[in-house]
Image (cartoon, rainbow over all chains, first blue to last red; front, side, top):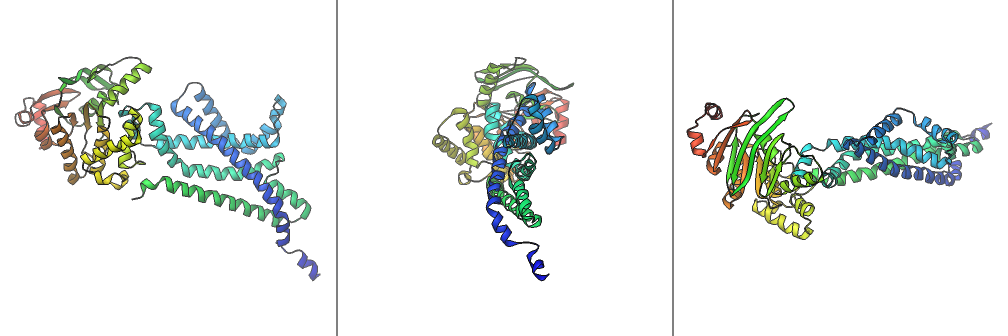
Length: 228
Length: 249
């Protein structure tokens, strides 16, 4: 009786150690998904923000619809549409590509709004000062407005990135072996859901803490001109 | 020689006319002060001169650059507007320094971007301009580390960095604490003595009396009266000018 109680300790350290290599390997997939998606999302977000600010005909409408649709539907539904839905019209993507596509389209819409808000948040006088010197609109944007708006955007960008890292867990439903999917696979063999899921949670937490510290440092560095 | 020539300048915001046919000629090295009650159109007039506001009608010439209103805003016209702006140093009421750049970087920005000079040349030029406005020891300070008066002097140095034909000041001391006004006015006065052509919108009467060659009184989007500062302040002819001066005393 007593022995069997000891055998079913709530958290088993040896199980953590045994499963750690697989979990870390899956973490690399999580990192890969996050980093690739955030890069693509930055490009999408930045260009759609510019399109909307410059009010470029036709593409402006497309960008607005894109942002509205993405922000108005659940990410899980978007993943299903891309992975299960698109093959019906002849577009078959493997799970990882589907995941990257869904994640970057999703984050891109949110980043677009952050970028747009941060560009509009730069004082109007900055643009006037720049063009009054004889700069073109493009020069003023590049040299004066965008560097300032980037600093304003960092906190929300950082937030979006955190959400993105966590959202990678959703692509486990389309059989991408990232951290959460790997945890479930290990649990299927070990029957230790609490231990394994807690370990996975800890890894997510460490990852995100690492990135937020990094981004905080970057924000501090880009705000040095505000320190008296 | 006339450096600025403005003919029949008109500007309306929606249905609200702000400038109703303003003519102005400014000679080389002349210092013109524009006064008038708020809403009289004086700031709008100044902003129209560099097309920060696009006028609805009229002709503007600064140096050799002449712009007629109403043209299509194509590539050629945009370039003409930029050429006009390069020759026109503009100083804002709220300074509008670039907050993420140091004083010297603020002054270097124009020559680097507009004239494509080397960083070393820009630095040398910026340094000499900051020395000129009395801030040689503040080159590496960010705007947030400078007082309002110092920020405005950096802004003047920045406007000078493109070697403008004329300098325009839009209420340069209105955002300053009273004890900081003097240092900014002194810099403007020094420039006047060097022979810089300037148009200044300001409420500083003593300054106008001291420095201006001509004072213009504007109200309701038109020039009501203009002349020698002593003449205009002590002996105004128009009823509206009199009323304004009594109010301002």
